[in-house]
Length: 414
Image (tube, rainbow, N blue to C red; front, top):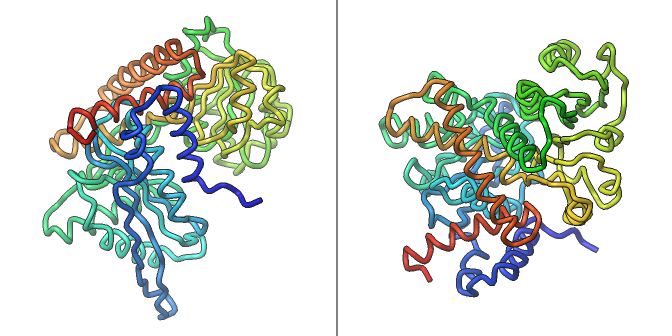
């Protein structure tokens, strides 16, 4: 049996929500499809003098709430269906956070790990030139994603500015600070996860100063999630990376662990810690579990062994639908990815606003605005969760779809 493509999964989620909320069939029909999907073929002169043509995509799902917003990924397994699905999910993520954006996503089929910096730059500029007919600060604002970062965003911004013959910093977000990036962007996703954790703990009666927290994945999101949760007074008892996990019931100093990983390249071997597998880490008894690694980590095989009261999805899609059902029936609150890790796109929105004004905020201002935005988003989803008597994931989707539907009605689309 062939694996379902991600776009089909996105449609199934939409269908489930539409049924639960008795969605207008006309609205449902519009939301099934991206407004447009652009396919481009980008010729790149390689270092050996040959020319290779790379295929790329940009999917724009729905712009009822505002300009499109979404990252661009470089990966050998990029497909048009994946990019379409991700654009749908970005519509919901932006709407959950009440951002004035619709969802989009881009991708190029390539393996940047096998390319030189020069080849990646030529590919980046060629791809952005090719999609420039549908992007821009008032139309569609790309950002970094898998295998793209501030470096690529700088090239994208420069290429678009060159085409327009003037400086356009607001055309992408996630840029380095000297060319219009925002303070607080690097830690924004982890900061948002921790705020969602704080609010979820309040609802469940978990006292953060006595809470045990386990974090799977110790990249940017995992590190900052652990760091900010520890600043709330939590005890970080378990951490892991791709090579294994460490556990200490007395808790870790997150910054000391980070410095160890920077030096050694892994958490494995950290002193005064028990080495455990990623699988064992997930099943450790704790108050709050934060999966920040790969998708499909909590499945129907291990969901019944999860011993936390609150799960915060720092990663995208770490919990399968079957596991969701098991956790919900077990009384575990799962704060879904489109809410828990919305801090990243929220500070990207702040960056765009600062670019348009050409006026920049301090880190304290950014963090204060992010806190208020995340609290408002969490409470909105939680109220929907209580009203529909469903789980937090469905509540987040329903909340998002309601916002998009209202905008479509006001604009006269249905």
